[in-house]
Length: 137
Image 1 (cartoon, one colour):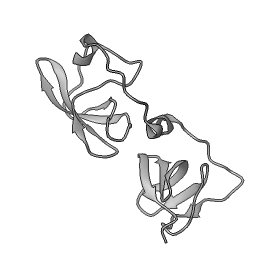
Image 2 (cartoon, rainbow, N blue to C red):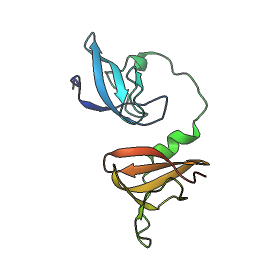
Image 3 (cartoon, one colour):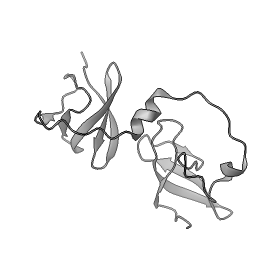
């Protein structure tokens, strides 16, 4: 099935590891370029692992071996909310842990999926995953 320009598609982002993208260009009947909904990066279409299809020009090329990225595995996990704790209003000065429920002014209610750095957390909202700061001094 051919995806139209502007439609959503699963593709692997080399910058942030997310898979939610929008088709932005076609060439020779194939998806040529996509834009990541998480980080805004524009790149060629790369289907997510396990979904190699006729759309991918990369399917005909030999695969390169690359080191695994620690953040990409956590981007695919969906951590359940810890319902024993009430949701907290998001504050970048507060410290959060995996499973915490947040109430964000712009994104609504979300669940902390991972602590990705000393001051960063990945939070899953209804609109998708977002990278937020926390424990800011």
